[in-house]
Image (tube, rainbow, N blue to C red):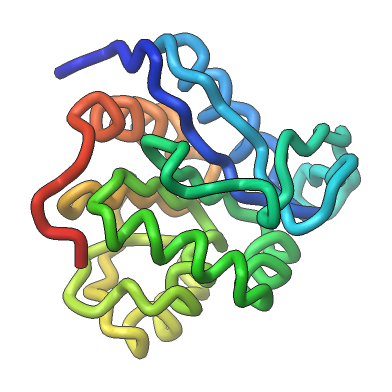
Length: 186
């Protein structure tokens, strides 16, 4: 299993309400493996992280969606958080940004409520994945095969259910980024 992603640039798409640990742990994993994470959001400045329902730390946005070009990134990470997932999925530019990673066969990792964004991007038909359990019906209706597993990998798409799954999620995320583009985009 490749464990280094030297020189790879990874977009983390998030906004206010992001589950802080689901942003911070994969971010650190990308850095530890030699990659460069970059926080992309719908607004400039800072976003507010949450620890479940309690405010956490603020994180500085590196680029807005207006400034970010998907071609500049090797992979995408979609952290969860109920508010984050809902706000991001409601932004058409965010959905287009996500869709472009699938169109190019680039690795995408999603955890918890981040799966809502994939529904809006229209990229789930025929995909096998997991999520926070309450998204099961939404994901199934969008064409995904939902399973209750710690981490699921489907041709470059890495998914996990919750913060307890982060060790497996981070390891598979790094592995898929190291593998690079996958032949079947969607």
